[in-house]
Length: 421
Image (cartoon, rainbow, N blue to C red; front, side, top):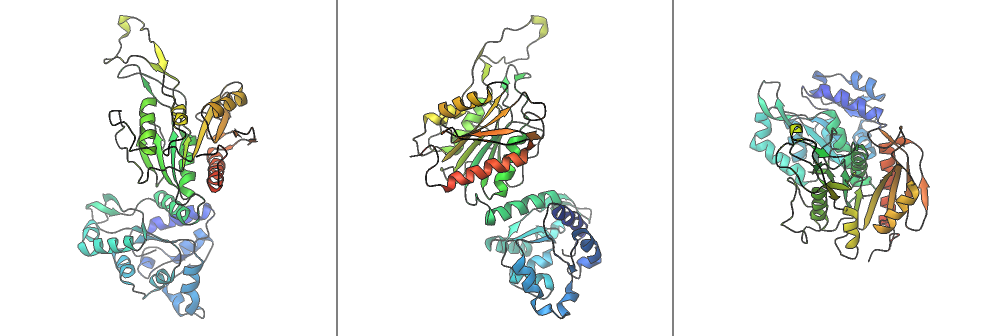
């Protein structure tokens, strides 16, 4: 923690990280002590908070090595322009800068300074230098400064810093580090007129939990989502879509940008991943089975009578991918979901065969305590060889961790269960 008015947010940050199970050792610079006391951090973390006075104790000669070598992550939040300059130029004249110089773990910083200081060419050169050396940045954000000015330089909120910390730790320790995965989420909307649409009760919670679990496992995650009330996880690339057609186009654009038909409608904000090869696709979205054959260009009025709406089959994204199974663009692992109200396992087994999936996640949507628009789920995983795994009711993030674990296992095997060529 360095000397900034944003230091008070570090207390909340330490509290949240400790509650999440992290062992947090806090180092305060001399300037930071002017804003917040070591006792505050010791109380929140349950561990000693270190200051420059500890440099002169009996174990001072090994303290900076012990702190830097035992850590999984060195997080400096807030980091001032002064401390940033120290890191960029290799200075080591206090406990924090010495520890940073000796650290063997990833370093994540959250800048906090006045807009003029952040935009100064010297600071920008230091930011560039640190990024080139592999130091990770969370923020800064735009907003009102202590000086009253508006601009770029505010420290981002603790929740965002924690999200970035999880992502950075995943890059180093995660089972999907270096892998690229696509996750779809939410219920598609099939337009009737400019106001109305056909949709379903999907909240997107399971898909967003999968995106979070994927990031924490170290994957580069692209989340293709319909509009939801949820905030996308920190560190994911998000593509917003509405209809099944848009979702299909987005999936094809991400899995095979070279072969994608440019005449098709491509959702705004689509950013293709750097490589055309995707390691896994997890289709957690509730894609419409049907859509209106015609969309009215103006709002339908009730005074004209009840409209007759004719439906047709909406695009089947997984079946489309199955038809290109031998193409190099097909993701190595493809996972589907089966949300059923009856004949759960038989319907799921049929989907895994017809859509050539590596496994399918089946859940009973008739259950009141699991499935759509609730925070928990009860699922069964089915594989092409008939094997199944049943899991009791748990949080959707808990379900997501299981699915990500199975994806990582399949990717680690020489041949996935379906024998990709």
